[in-house]
Image (cartoon, rainbow, N blue to C red; front, top):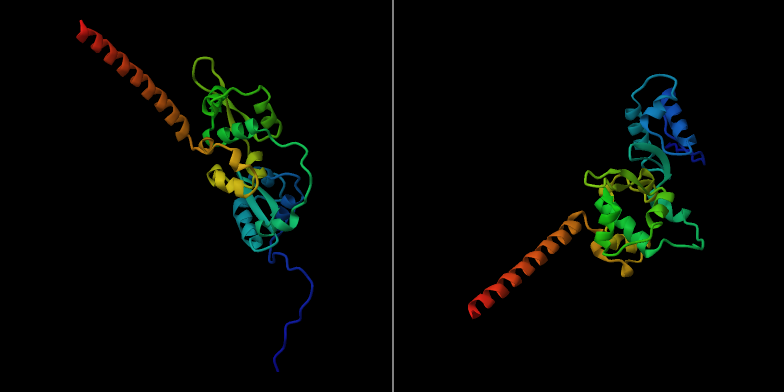
Length: 231
């Protein structure tokens, strides 16, 4: 006679966890924000290989509705990306980022560290003084030191919160402009694809300027030679 396994409605959480592993699981679950390894180490009852335990827990949760993720070396529990559609809440957005703010953020994201003057050079137009400030209030952008040139202008870079907000583990995971448009994060029809370069765009703009200068010199020399021949 074959015995059938009895079904029940009990959720099977990760099994065979040590006391320290359970502590780490609980600490991350209860935390209001992602935690780095040193913070976790300061809260557990005894010294352990926290990184190894985190990797074990991450593997335990990889096929569940809740995943343990690491973003910019900080750990937190997140709803599985496969189930994100269940968590969408429809609401009216009263104010969107301006086109200038979106372009400025895009330039900082893909050209960082970058100064205000460099941002204006890439955009081809000056922007209001509050554009970067808005991005800083959102905690997506922050000062990233000063450039070693005359005047020591401030350079701007993205924050860990930017990565967390867009569910990125590292900057190399950044999507293309078409992927952002398909996700509904930007109106790709009104965005210049050129600002989504990888640092190459700014360099090319500089090279174009040099070519223009040489072109002017060639014209001037040709004009001078023509005048000499006419004498």
